[in-house]
Length: 255
Image (cartoon, rainbow, N blue to C red; front, side, top):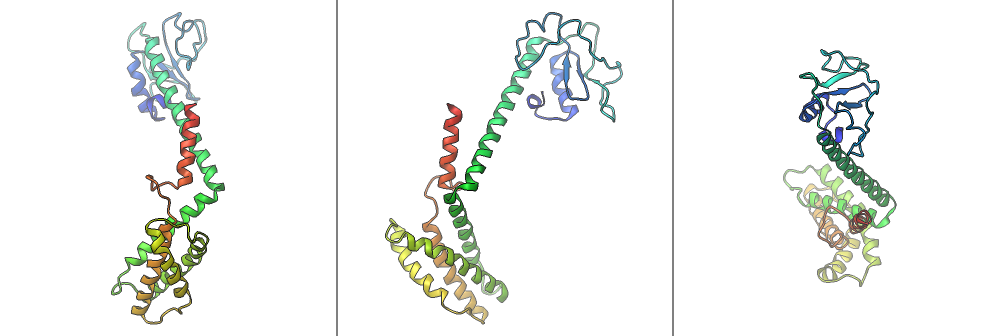
């Protein structure tokens, strides 16, 4: 019922249930009792609902009990009785329950797919490498955006040290793929790799301007190497492996 309404708030639920045009009782365990004509429970058309049948004993709230009490231990009328003999239409009730069932099932499928994807990402080394490359690229962009006249010397030094740590990660990756790059990377990576190896042996600068120049040089070569290892696909928010896993999960759900 909450899935059909889209909320657990008693007021929202009551507003939605009022569309049934009949009385509804809510008990503390959040069970809803919809009053329908005699015989409707026997021919109940909603598999997601349970008909108690005529003769079933049910705690009926006082007529004036139309809001949940503070201790939530007593039932109340989620939709009060407006006139004698007023009952809900079983088909309308069934339609509402069907909507709730479909929304709940869709939510469970999304949650299951999300858990499966998280489990995959925790154990997949490919995803871990590609996520690291994204972080490195973002750090390089931040370093290249640093301005000589506004950035302090300590900030520039920290960024330069970060770029050196990133190059320590990127250089072995580039060396392992030497000769396997294509297109623009085939031209840029060898020079960037050579420059990166040379920059790592240069001592940090004491002067702020020279530190800024050194930072930009480190960030440029790190950005080239990071770009060479970023995934090539149409979904920049996912790694190649994440996208493949999501597609496999989608295909599995379809089957």
